Amino acid sequence: MTLTQLHYMIVISETQSFNKAAEQLYVSQPSLTSAVKELERELGITLFLRSGRGVTLTNDGREFLLYARQIYGQYESVLERYGKGGTYKKKFGVSMQHYSFAVKAFVDMAKEFDMSKYEFAVRETKTVDVICDVSTMKSEIGVLYLCDFNRKSIEKLLRSAGLEFHHLIDCQAYVYLWKNHPLAGEESISFEQLKDYPCLSFEQGDNSSFYFAEEILSFNEYSQVIRANDRATMLNLMVGLNGYTLCSGIICEELNGSDYLTVPFRDDEQNPNSTMEIGYIVRKNTILSKMGELYVKKLKDCLHV
Image 1 (cartoon, one colour):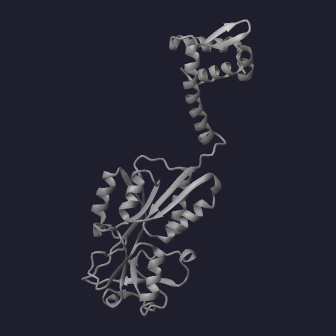
Image 2 (cartoon, rainbow, N blue to C red):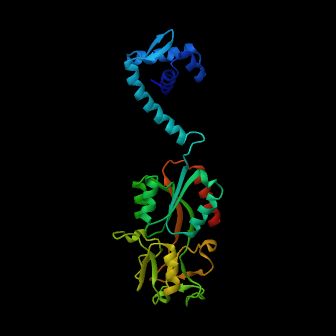
Image 3 (spheres, rainbow, N blue to C red):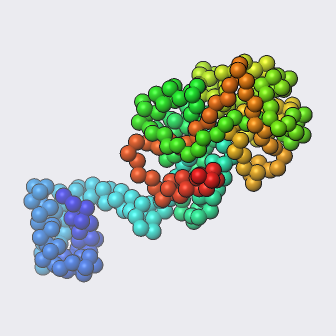
């Protein structure tokens, strides 16, 4: 049984004529007759009664027609949504730790597509959610970082989720703060200098391991810590409380404005620096979509790699 045979039967029942149905379907009458006979043979029932005045449905034919209309109607609905000229919008999503450069890359990517034909999503979220979103295909790409401290834990999660990490750039730690912060004019800033100011950290969930922290050197003992769950709040805390965070030093002035800056973190024996390896994650053996390929390119452009 094929969808074509079901379509033929529906049209014959509507026109009550093999000749008229053949004309409407743009097929020859012998081909139409052969298709119906093959369907009747497969079903083991007679669908039509033929006479000089045309064709009529048998009782079995009337019952089968109800199912045929349902099946073919669903097929037409699928075509209407997903077929050429359909209403279906291709989806593309990115999940990321809170990186302005990753959002900038998304903006640059989206500008090159007719957004009326696509359904885009960008998710700044917790580290575990970045991994989960890509694993479940909620997002095609995730953006996060590895360092000596979190590498074993994160890589274990990636392996169990069937994901692979692609390196983009290595960065040293920087102190990210408001331009009018008392330490903003320093050439570099030590951990000791930061003790009087609150360290700002993105919340990772109630039971989340500190291996998932988005801020480098998360294992240090900070005298003051404030957790936030979005970038806008964190920027407000930098202004209102002279808060700071430790980051890659890569900021997007176009999106965040010029009121914030980064100063190199000066390490010591008790507080050694660490390299942030920023990259993107995808499912193993995945071929990126056109949107995904362009997004990775825009990421590299933003990072100048």
